[in-house]
Image (cartoon, rainbow, N blue to C red; front, side, top):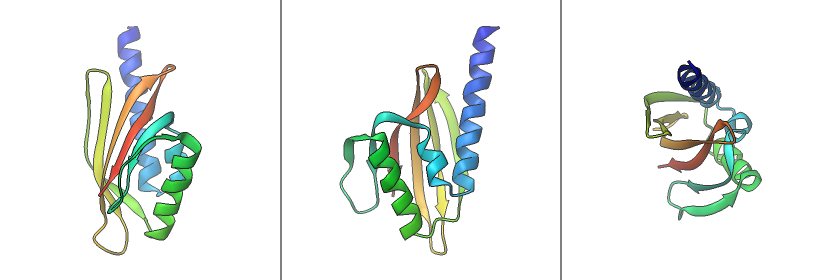
Length: 117
């Protein structure tokens, strides 16, 4: 029974993250960041091992500078304890592809990788 509760909790956390993306709420999205993560923005080198606070500031800046208005989910799956979320960040232009990788740490799913292209 605990196993099913764990799956349900992970699915709920994934849904909450998707809802934060759909509402273009960078602060709420960054609340799911691990203490250290990797983040990649379009036309920039990937930043490895960036701290949660700095990554949150960078994501909010990206959302603001690119007028991100929402998110369209294209894929959400879990394999071997790792959850993947992929889709498109929506703005007035063509938008951006987004992929997020999460792992459960300290009892809750935390984002370990963000890639925007």
